[in-house]
Length: 410
Image (cartoon, rainbow, N blue to C red; front, side, top):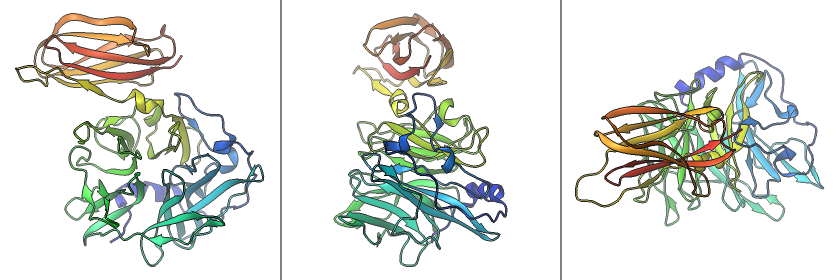
């Protein structure tokens, strides 16, 4: 059974209302530079779309833009009001033709009379995946041909009775499909994966408690090599409204690390529909910030992903380890100051040291001091540090250590 997640879509319907203005398909062409010629972002999120593509009262973005490897072809989905009782998610595309970005149009394989969503490029850019309510199958793909895109082919992903499948998918290098599913026993959506093995898709399996919570977890983006997973969640600890983006990194034993909130710069107003460009330079997401008429795409340097990557190194010893339960700073990226939070399983003598990107020590925030069991925080003034990537490492006297990266923006 294919259905939308009612608990996370209700607020969208309220915003749309019953506006009847039709979406114009002919908008001014952009220049011939990659990514519509927009100025690339740094470690501060900025609105991506030019004015001609921003949300209006009768349409807004329902997903991030996805680009071909060269950045010269773009697909995206919008939630459009075509009439008082006619609201649909619809696919659109633009590409560079004769050194200019083409006007907006529906892809050749699209059927705008149905709900269609979540375009997602394969790593090589020769395959595009999407979902559609047209007859014949929900999960679909098209392949690039010498003359354009092929007709869509249905992907036979087995779905058990009682499973409700959401509108967002992501596909890794192996062809595995990450998706969101709710069940009668668990009406809040969770992240699942359907593995592509021996030419067939397998029954979707939950990513389990390592990733999912008792709250809504949906809208996955998967790194092509399964190194990390980004998704939306309304679990406790959110910064923004409705949903925040979280990231979980794959550990050496192939399990998933505890998801990390992606921070204020991404989640200040809530965020969803994450997508990382194929060149791994930019993270896109949707949100509505001051002045936006609806949901628009924003982008930020993908360095934010590296800044959140936890590096764990624990020395072998006879007594049990695991005294370090948590280490994270917020905000990240930071400008004037940031708060480093950590939690100890047991009382311990610790040090907390900051290194720059060249491995040079910057400062000892804590040096051989005893801290008691529980949660602690250290406020770190970064106002005099040059912009860049830094590593902070918490070290116990028994050799256990935990490192995190942070980005300073001045």
